[in-house]
Length: 70
Image (tube, rainbow, N blue to C red; front, side, top):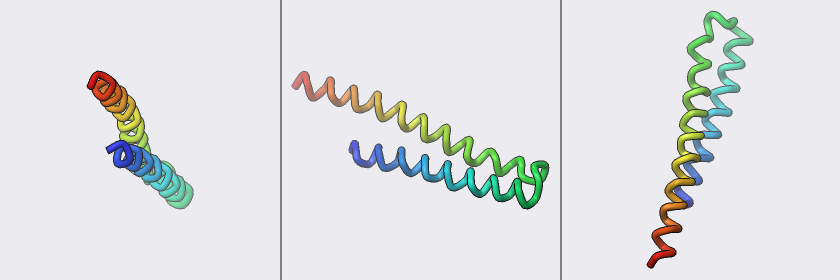
């Protein structure tokens, strides 16, 4: 399960980087006013990355405590 959690964490980081590059491209070609909504995608992906990272730490600590007691 730890591998899946770490994979999803890296997945969201990759999505954030990819959408940030796409948003920068749209801002450069069409201007900031036309591309404001494109900037939300990397922000949401970064929020998901940090949420997954935070939850992975909590779940791994809980799993380690549980396995240590058994």
